Length: 291
Image (cartoon, rainbow, N blue to C red):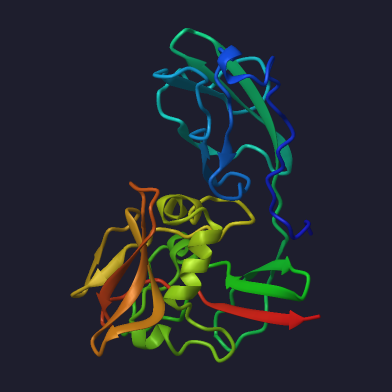
């Protein structure tokens, strides 16, 4: 088990030669992570708070992403934001250099601490084919939150009403593609996640811009969503290209919302599917215990 707090700790500071703005010639370097970093998840590092001490100046940025002080993993760029797959499973440093138009450089290293408290178990369920769950634990001053998601795509026995892959490896990786009416009534204790539930997971995984990638990362502490494709009008489409995961929210009498991720984009988005489409399923349950 790991500790239940995800934190970014700033351990470095900029030291200036003078407090008088007119005497300053080097830029001020500042940066932070836009979302709490998690090991192997993509995160945006943002240095847009950096500023020049000279009017009309412009800035460039480069990054030491592994914090080894031996080299710079990026070239100079005028963009203050860089996307990085966070390299530390516990803690480490990332460095930034900011250069102004006169060639003066300010360097800043910051320490980041990241951790996720989770456990993986195989619970009792009333499904004929069981599944593992990943149990995220969050502690707050007045309550404790347990957030349990199925760790595998749900797999069902063969039926003419849904789609199972022929190869056993595909079955294990992709699970069963099923219509919404089946997905919404699978298990008495675990729910089909609502859009709001999926949105909380998207936020946990770095927001909509990066969650599509982070939901697929093959790390033990992630959901590791796969790309089984979708069956529409009896035809399997987009295998290994996209994954569609039902939500519990109807759009209207004939359609429902689903989460979509893809191989070609880091984004996660919600789409509307006909309920007769066959898509993937993850289940969820949560518990709140107040102190």
